[in-house]
Length: 369
Image 1: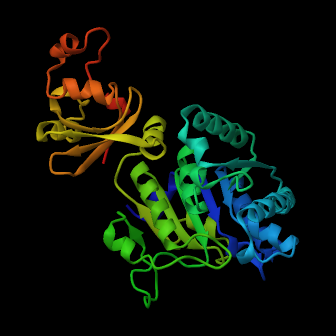
Image 2 (image 1 turned 180 degrees about the horizontal axis):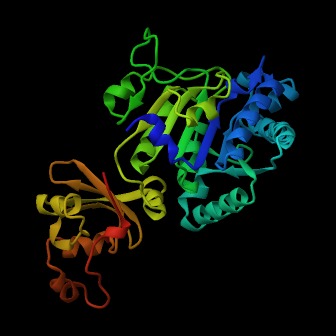
Image 3 (image 1 turned 120 degrees about the horizontal axis):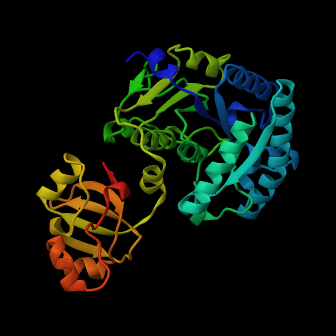
C-alpha cells in the first residue's frame, strides 16, 4: 500500500525530538523549538492528536549552570535535569501558546510501565490531556531515575509512550534523513518491514555528543513498534514542516511498518513491559496450536520448565529446538507445572487437587512471535 494511503488513517501521533534538533551551540534554541511547535500545531489544527517526547533537559540545565555535560557526575546530571526541565517546559509552553495550545508535562521511568495499574493510570492521564486539546510533553524522570528503572534513551521511551497511548504513528526526529543501508548511499531506505540482524548490522554508532541515542536505539524502537502492529518514521528535524509533510504522504525519511495486526492494550503491555522469570518448552503440536490455530497453551503440550515463577508471572515459550515462540502470563507456578507437564486437563485435578485451570496460558494472556 502506498505510504500516502497508510498515513491517511493516522489520528494519534507520538513525535520524539532529539537534543541536537532543539539546541544550538549547546543551549536550547528558541528558534528551533518555535519551528517545531508551529509544525505540530498545524497537525493538531486538522484534528490529529500529538504527544511530544523531548530530549534536552540535562543539556538545558548544564548550559544554564555553565557546566560541561561530559564532566558531570550522575547526581550532577540529575540536578541539571531538574533545572533543565523548567527551562525546557517554559520554552515549549511559550511557543505552543502562541499557536493556541496548552501543554502538560509527564515524567516517566521504566518502572511506571512495568506495573499494570501504573501503566493504565498513565494511559488515563494521557487520554484526558489529549481530549482536552492539551499537548502532553514527555521525558524520562532523570531527576530520580536510577539504572534499574531507566529506559536509557528517549527513542526507547518514545516507543513505550506510543504503546501507552496506542498511537498510530511514531516519528523520530533526528539530525539524519533516515536509515541508510550503506554509508555512501545518496538517499535513505524508503521502507523497512522487519528489523533483523542484517538491518541491525547497518546501524552504525551512537548519536551526537549532546544526546544519548543513535541509529541502534532507533532500530530498537522500530522493533517495538513493528511488533505492536503500528508504524514508525525516522526523519530529519531540519526539514521545514517535516511532520505536516510526512502526514500528507511526502516520501520523507524511512518508514518502518510490518504486516502484523495492531495488538490490543493488554497484549502490548505483556509483550513489552512484563519481565519474564522463567521458560516453558513445548512440543511441535503445541507450537502449531498456538501459531496456526490461535489456541491457548495446555499442559499436555509442555515438555520442559525452567526458572522460578508463580501464578501471574510472565514466561517465555520455546520450541523443543530452542526457537522462541512467544511470551505469556502463566496460571501455574514452576513447581506445579513441573508436576502436570505433558498431562491432559482432566488429569490435573487429581495431581494437584483443589483449584486448577484448564490452560497453562490463556490465549488472551499470550503473545506469539
